[in-house]
Image (tube, rainbow, N blue to C red):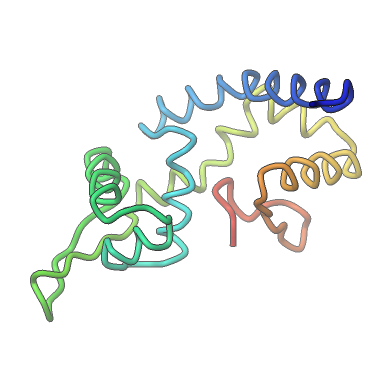
Length: 156
């Protein structure tokens, strides 16, 4: 059973998710991807050019599911397949310049109302907000030396 404070926090989080919807729509319009696809692109960026099986393992999904995901991302020009020169049965995938651009499109987030509201918080409030959200979702996004994420899709 949720306490009143926990219920308030859950409602606030759900309102924040809804508040982020315009960012998701802008990402879809500008790059043809859903916000959820950013994780796949980040993983592939971090892995470099790899066989689909390794990509699937890194995402914790089946090879057939990864193949469908790669099909969708390839259609949108975000990833490219390449047959191995050593073994033509092995197909490697990697980010295209367009895929890398989608990960690095900070303007999309900075220009959003959500991004502007977060930027208006004090640095201490920004850190506290990031700490709480990262604790909830179980994912940390390290900041660079200036205190800002290296890229929007950062998770290095």
